[in-house]
Length: 510
Image (cartoon, rainbow, N blue to C red; front, side, top):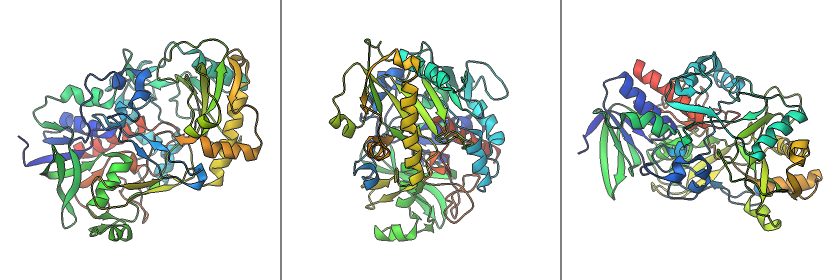
């Protein structure tokens, strides 16, 4: 039987929610309710076996959202997978453990978020991990998440490392140095060849704790507000609506799509948007749902291999390169992935016949300028959303990715890839700038890293303060990727876990 009230109620058992639940149990005697809209992650091969992770996309473990079409992406609707399962996207993603660049976090602090600079958050990154290389000034051991270098690199992954080095990129023995620029094996959250997800690492060991209640297939539909204080919430389970109280706080860890949606459903957001769908405004917060950012991935530069490739391993990539689109940039804005299968957009696949024995080099823009938004089209909890990332809306993003295509082709022309490549499939030859831009618009995709829709800061658009408290509301915090004011220049899983650790430290101390 569910108690009527808990000290803390956490919405979303994703990368950050699992952390917050675990740390509250470790550090306090509080009662905790953790609500997850998806089901269990137990005993599912695609969730545990790294090379199978792409099978999760579009499956029952994926919310399967899509970005709105726009002229900037040739009017295509781009898929946005999000985990709908215990562990959230941390259970379905590509297992990359990357922090990004020191400058990412220093910029958060400079934007009015004291305590979020790299030096201050580094201990939280270290606390979360059990790094195979042992403890150092920048790496942690003994934390819940096992992190290992990709092993037995696939020929495509090994070629990226060798080609990057012959092109002039430094070798990165560890891609999680404070200022990564170069090429090397990926860090993966893997233990014994199996995904070491936030749910397995943080939550599973405390599932039997007397102070913890975990409910799966429980979709939160509205926060309970007494004036501007959050006192609990309503959720749906088995077709029934339930209410539960939170005597201390409600912590939203539902991610960059569902956290703003829940705030909007509860009357917290831009008054103008709420009025249009008939929701009464409780707290007028113009930034809710704004500032959406995502990494832009090009799918992809495709090559037919000379010889049959071995079966895919690791996470289908295994290595990565970080480099700048222009020499004068202080922080790399491009990431290169060697994908061991033909990974291309539907629009490109319709244009070119793709052979089976093929692989891709995938350029990604990891410091995009484009900003998008999320809006509810109706007031229902499962009603349609308008999610518009505005990919390629900023000319600077187009310029960077045109450079990324050229750089990807330069890497492919290095000796290591010349030994692998029979012929270039997409694009079949070097392109003019005009053709490159057309290629970007047809090939660009999401790297599945939506962030920023409840950004922290001090300005009018800020949704939470530097201690993650929702502005204008009491008893309510956000701890997930939605609070990032700007997107880190690498995958967002490790930063989301760090945000969970940051919130936990505040709650346990509080």
